[in-house]
Length: 266
Ligand SMILES: [Zn+2]
Image 1 (cartoon, rainbow, N blue to C red):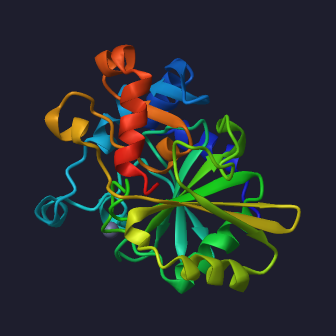
Image 2: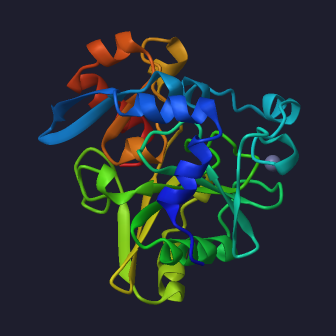
């Protein structure tokens, strides 16, 4: 390519005060860990994420709001870099992970992972072998289900191996050096991509693709207002992003088990 991710982020943060503020705040977020059925679950109090995790995602709201991934509506401060002539690299101004980028399709098209875009996903992971890429299905945490995008995060952010199974959250994982074999593995599940979270990592000439099948996007606690938790891909790996401080302080292991039971297709 070659594209140096740290230099790209620095260039962006130097000219976009909002992004700079949110990346600086990330180094001071509160974390704590609760053990649920023997599994450590990290809680991250990250109030800047409210804009994303509490986004209204109904068709009417999406149709009426300007798409923030289309070039004519992106903030004027936001820089971009070309990827394969098909995608653009953008800094996510509301980061969860210390490196958090968006890889947005050049054209406005729905968040639907077909064969071509799954192969793109693998090739993009190969282009950035030190990072972990993810894809939120349209009904599984994507805050822009109307504009196709992947995300890039740093691999050392995840406390547990993403592919390691736990009794809390269902997932399937495959490794291999042939993209077609991984594509077939995914297709053989018969799962609806709109209700799945995907991760891919490329290391030592092999891809590891992990898929989290979901029953639903948000748990009942979100809708009754008792816990504003809206799980996307990162939450399924065992780091729950919490945007309201009272939720962060009082959530229990029982709450977490119940939330995962509702949203994961166990
Ligand atoms: Zn768009």
